[in-house]
Length: 45
Image (tube, rainbow, N blue to C red; front, side):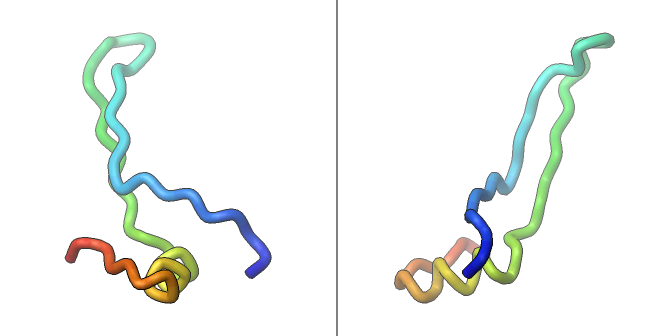
């Protein structure tokens, strides 16, 4: 592996100008998922 692995499935914060809630979702990267499976951990479906 040539990269560091860090993942957040969701991050929520207030927009700095209008103060509305922003929610950003991301799928698990395939390399991250593969490494977690090698460590006997399975992400929630």
